[in-house]
Image (cartoon, rainbow, N blue to C red; front, side):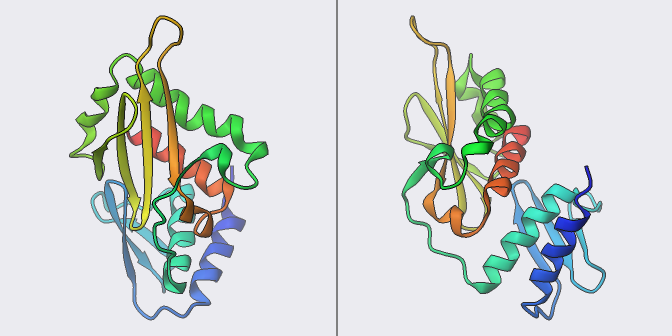
Length: 183
């Protein structure tokens, strides 16, 4: 799938804000340098270009950051509680929730093995939870539940209400998938 149109629009949106210097941004376990003159986003840890879907997220995030990010509200919402998600619920579950359940359903505490790999901290939530700091001021809460006699293991992702002012629905689905993959 080509991301060329979305990338070009994201670059245009960012460059219209007239940033003068290259920008560095931490995104999950990596730091990226956003080269404004050559329109290139490079991973500083691997010295490779960011994948297109990650680049779009980074550019959308930076455009909002330059305008001024909303403060974190502390109000956690499930994906279904966000506005305009109706057509994306199945894709969200398939890309983010199901991989987490497959990997950590039998051992929710195992998710902490990634604490040195991804910026996260344990959260007091249900059976087990962590807060992943995907980007500055973009926390994602992941809750996991053990299986019991009636139900199998389960998981869900929660987003601070402010995420809707940073990312569109498609971006949130992609972000959730990236987080699930890196866990």
